[in-house]
Image 1 (spheres, one colour):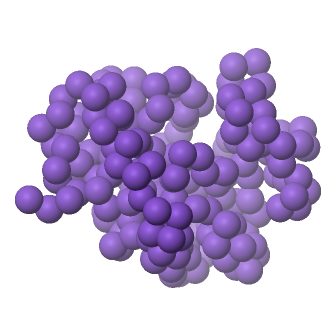
Image 2 (spheres, helix red, strand yellow):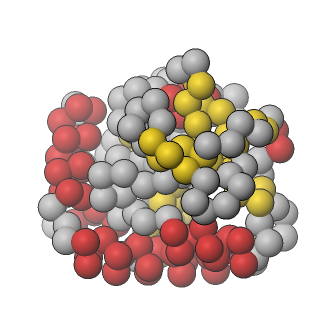
Image 3 (cartoon, one colour):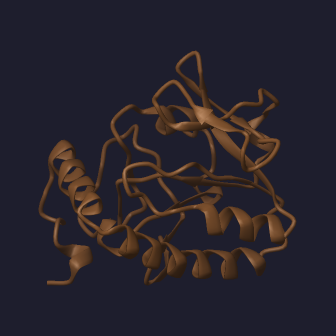
Length: 195
């Protein structure tokens, strides 16, 4: 069985979340960097071919998520404007950081921009969202707090993508009604298009 389909029989979201986070945490820092570099190449190649994307929401990785530094630098090299999430009053707001050092630990112990120049969601062309897993239908499994599900519930899924390791793509995960969907997934093995 391929690594990416290993957990497709797990229907309980909390069990699936725990299994995949533990698998991520078990990777060496060298493997995380290697896989992240591969993914960054696929992601940046695709973005460079799309002239409609000017502003992109990214995030600061936690718990051995795909490293985003190469993506951040590559997007700046493509003259994209970057925004990062910041939790304000239990809601995600997106902020343009002044520079790559303009971050500090925020509400959930996640690095957030210090700046407070919030932008309206409608001004963001692409949302790159953190995911614990993504199903073949595009449904996203997050960490369980519902922050992205609430924040992006009214955003067209064509504007939402996820960057994950190949083993985090699960074929038979349907999620729940409130789980947001993504239209595109980038893994360390290449981009995946969702129907």
